[in-house]
Structures are given as structure tokens and as C-alpha cells.
Amino acid sequence: MEGMETPVVEIEHLKMSFGENAVLKDVNIKIAKGENLIVFGKSGSGKSVLIKCMVGLLSPDSGKIVILGHNMIDLKNDELNALRKKIGFLFQSAALYDSMTVGENLAFPFRDLKDQSKEETAELVKEVLINVGLEEAIDKMPSELSGGMRKRVGLARTLILKPDIILYDEPTTGLDPITSKEISQLILDVQKKYNTTSVIITHDVECARITGNRMIIIKDGVAFAEGTFQELSTSKDEWIHSFFE
Amino acid sequence: MALGLRLKLKEAIDKVVVKPSENLYTEALRDFFYETSRLTLFAVRFFREMTRPPFEFKEFLRQSYLVGYKSFPLVGITGFIMGLVLTIQSRPTLEEFGAESWLPAMVAISIIREIGPVITALIFAGKVGSGIGAELASMKVTEQIDAMEVSGLNPYKYVVVTRILSTSLMLPALVIVADAIALYGSYVGVNLKGDVSFQLFFLKVFQKLSFTDITPAIIKTVFFGFAVGLIGCYKGYVSNNGTEGVGTAANTSVVIGSLAIFIIDMIAVQITSLFT
Image (cartoon, rainbow over all chains, first blue to last red; front, side):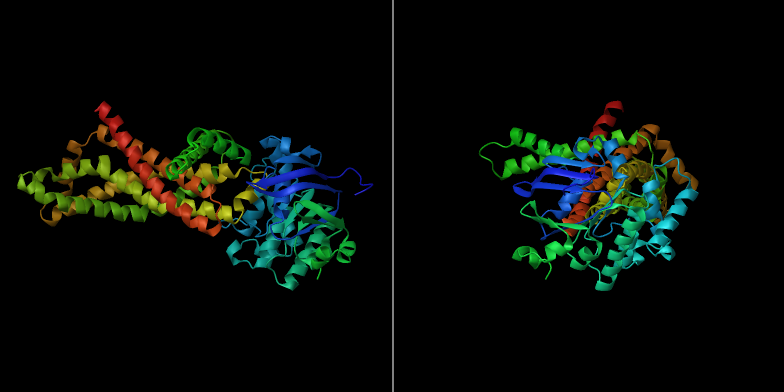
């Protein structure tokens, strides 16, 4: 991206392989503050691996991932955990803790913050649940929630720490078209309200259209194409175009 | 464990164990060393994390309730049957020698020293070890452990340390309860064919029991509990084969946990015999 101010995410020459299988060969991405970047690609192309590297769940073989001015690869455990509090991650399955209620799930990230009272935490839990439209679900167990509700609670848990960056791993997968649209709109609302920077991994064209400012398509371990939704959806390249059919 | 460290560990073991003429045995040997070294590192991490704040006291209490209190009915019933059956089975042999009056003492020593701790630990491995293995593997598969990690929290401390501490402390308590109930079962067994008062039965029991019978037996159950918790947590925490991995983690937690109980028991008996 030419002319970008200091990017909040800067990925350079990222390489990651599992045994002989090189998943990411040379990925270079820059993301500006407040931007919603859509990452497209075939299944197994390394999209989820990319965001797992960004949050330190996987260690890349080589390359540089600079997030909010910190190179993830050089960070010690404590520094990495401190940085992770500024990065939200919405898992594909929402990854709610089965043994806790919705309220406890949301309060969980605050358990080691001594300077925050229980009342303040309860207030925040209530606030984010209202933001995702699920204030009545606070005492429910995850097993009592529908797929769409789980995604909303997962998003609420991501939002509760008020992160600067949110990484979404296929946020609309497994949802019906109406709920998918609601979740996509919610992602956009969250971005506007909290001015977050987002990376959204998705196969859902409608979600990409609603939420994305910019898109990249990963092919053969590199960022094969880059542009706006409009540019890529009208691309002459048959392979790129096939994503939008 | 970081991916880089795992790969280095595997490479190091490959260099030592795998020769050019690699066959099935060397591969099995390599896997054994690899698993053992990873389990050792996992245990070392437990001791390191256990001593560092913050301490997850509330979760530890919750796990102790689940692991200890919820196992109580099973352990109690097993203990009662254990005492009853052992008494019924031993009586004919002692009758042959006219040593029927030794029945309470003999059963008590067998139960307190060996049968109570080992049987209870095996039941515990079956119920709790498999549960921990399956639960953690399921948390891994559904990315709950990753979710804790990306929240900037330490899942090892919350998930693993609390469970291993609970199993290490709850198993001795369960064994004490199981032993007491087994002795009561023995009292019932004695009275199926006789008429011995409650006071006389327990007088006979405590005449022959000493602290050298009770203390080592209870101490070894701390190690049994530690092994069950450690293996269950390890198998669940490193599981990565999807839903199939959940079943495998539960199964191997019980199998390896039970084997560990026998190995620890063998070592404990050798050590105890040095002092008695």
C-alpha cells in the first residue's frame, strides 16, 4: 500500500512450513490503523496459519511480524502476553469455555488484572453483551447457545479487552445467510465504534463485501493478489474471478 | 512447548537413537524417548509454574471438588466391596490353621499397606485420569486452550497446574476414606459367619497397625495422584488429532496412568522395605 502512514501490522518475508509442506513461502502485508483487511484463499492455503503466526500461536520459520511496533518473534513470554491483550482473536468455532457461563467466559480475560474490581468487570461484561445484542444470555452455558449466538459471544469476549487489532478466523462459517449478514454487519459496527484494525479470514463473498476495505488473496504461499473488493471481483484473472462467482 | 523446541528435541533424539539401519524397534525406541522427554519437560514446567504467582486458587478448589468429592461414591462402594470380599476369601485359609482371630489384623494390613492405595488409585486413574485426558484434548480440539493463550493468560497454570495439584492432594484423602470403608466392609464380612463386636474388631485391627504401615502407604498415594494428573493433563494438552485424539488421550491416560501406579508402587515398596 503506497502512501500508508505507520502501519499497525507489518509482515515481511514470512515463511512457515509443517515438515516438508511449505504453507507460507513469502508473505508481505502491511495494514493501516482502522483498516479491515480481508484474506481470501483456497482451503489449506495458509490463511489461518497466517493469523495464528500474527498472535504468536505458531512460530514462523523466518520473516518478520511487527505488530503495534513490536516484532512478535523477538518477544519474551511476558511481553508477548502483554501484546496479546491488545489483539483480539475470534476463533472459527468461537472457542467458548464449556465449563463457564457466558458471563464468566467474558470476565475470564480479566482474571489476572488486580487493579480492576469485580463491579467494573461486571459492568464491562454487560456493556459488550449489549453491543452484540445478547444481554439476556449472561447466565447461559455455551451449550445452550445457537451457532450465531456463540459467534456473538466470542466476539464480545474479543471486544471486552478493547483491542487495537481483531483477527477473525472465518467468522461466518457454518451460519445461515441471514445470521452471516448480521455477523458481518456487527464486525463493521465494531470497527466503526472502537476504531479497531481487523484482519478477516473468510470464504464468504458477502462478508468480504460488507466488511472489507481491502483484500488479499493467498495462493501458493504468497499474497497473490491485492486490491479493493470492487477491483478483485471484476478481475480479468480467471482464478481470482472464480472466488466471486 | 514451543514448536521450535519440540523440533530440536526430536532432532536430538533422532541423532542419538536412529541408526542408518532403522527398523520398527528403533522407531518405537525413538518414540519412547521422545514421549518420555516431552513428559519430563511437561513435569518440570509444572513445578516451575506452580511456584509462580498468580495462583489459581478458586479453580484449584473447583477441581478438587470435581476430582475428590465427585469420586467419593465410586471409591466408597469399591472400598466396601474390597474389604468384604477380601475377608470372605481369606477366612477359609485362616480357618484351616485355626487363625480365624487374625482375620481383622490381616485384612487391615493388606488393605492399608497395599490393596487400598493401589485399587483406589487404579479406580481413580480410570475415572479421573480418563476424564482429564478427554477434557483437555477436547479443549485443545475446540481451540479453548488457544483462546486462553491469545487472551494473554497462561492456560498451563489454569488448566494443568490446578488439575495436577488436585489429583495429588485428593487421591490420598480418597484412599483414607476408602481404607476406612474397606475396614467397615471387612467388619461386615467377619460378621457374616461370626459374631464380633465393632469395638473388638477395630481393637484387633489397631493392635497390629502402626504408623509405619499407614504413613508410607499414604505418602505413595500423593505420587500416584501426581502421576494420574500429570499423564492425563499431558495426553490431553498435547493431543492434536481432532476428535479421534480425544478418545486416544482418554484411553492412553488410563493405560499409562495405571502402569505408572504399578511402577511407583514397586519403587515405594522397595524404599519402604529399607526402613522397616
